[in-house]
Length: 435
Ligand code: DLL
Image (cartoon, rainbow, N blue to C red; front, side):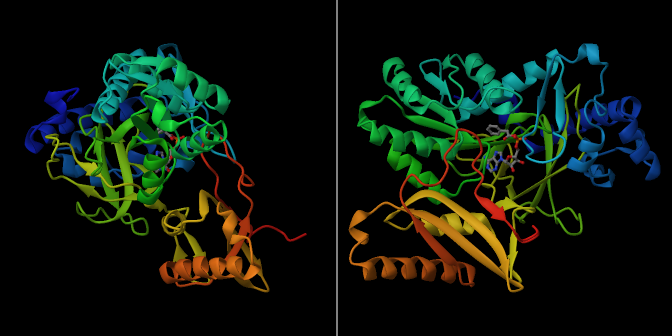
């Protein structure tokens, strides 16, 4: 079902008219209500009346996570605090978090957009939706919660963790939709196997996953282990949370809520705006947000955009699955390596589990990439030469994609940490003082 036919199936010319009207409204608001934006605009000699078409967006300055941090906590709010009814914060592991706020109208819009997104994946009022995202400052739990309720699903707000209980509820309540990070869904599958639960006896049919990067190969693994259709949804706190973009069930790109956000792709080095189809950093401008509008927010997420009408009938632009982040890319002895390239290789190898770690060290002035994987086939343990052959097979496969030698560490199943939140898989020790 198409949740909002008017906005999801608009012609591009009508959409651009709407975007322009809303862009003017947003630019006026930030100029008059947020000193940070006003100062930036004045430095560049920009006045809101200068915006005559959506293309003029490119003249506006970028906003970065640094700008947001420097205005911690409420410095970029465009309404008096009494009009803000909720805050969330982004999941940074270091430094100050980025705090974002919502008015009652913003929450209503957000709910509508997450309802749109879950409908994209095929969720209806017939469904029982179990939310295994953490509730709290993270936008995942609450964001999906209200959208699923609005779409009419029966919501089970279990939150992340306590995996055995998740499975018990899944069985007893007849859960049909699982909402979690992709990495947590694999852990749920693993615990189900340990508990002797036959996955095919569950009613689960759709997984709404997001919040962290995952490859197509990881999707296949999840779909086969949980016997579901796994769709991806993308969002970020700074822009709103989940609901910014999501896949329909043809899984051919994430439909972007372009009536509420303008997306651009830029060259991360030069800031130059790229053509549709070209890969670059995604940049979002909000069009309807009241409490926390953002102008040209640089996400650091890398993708590409297409404006072709999708086979599902929606005309909104689609973004391809995120391939990585500009700050995730590792440079190992001069070679660029994305963690997603490593994941894609590992997921196709029979005999290792889907959990992995990437460690980067510098030894004797040389960068060294170590990949840690869990062995799942006991028959490879003996004789020892079998394990050696298997290890060199994996290293060769990684070498053929990355063009660098990788150190491989094979550990017992269950050794690597699993969690309900976003998986942390890359540890770069190069700039840390050695003991
Ligand atoms: O992760 C919002 C969200 C929650 C989206 C639940 C989807 C589902 P933040 O905590 O602010 O917000 O983190 C945003 O996470 O810039 C990406 O780097 C990454 N990310 C989010 N969704 C995806 C995805 C939420 N589907 C940051 N694929 C973003 C790849 C994703 N990366």
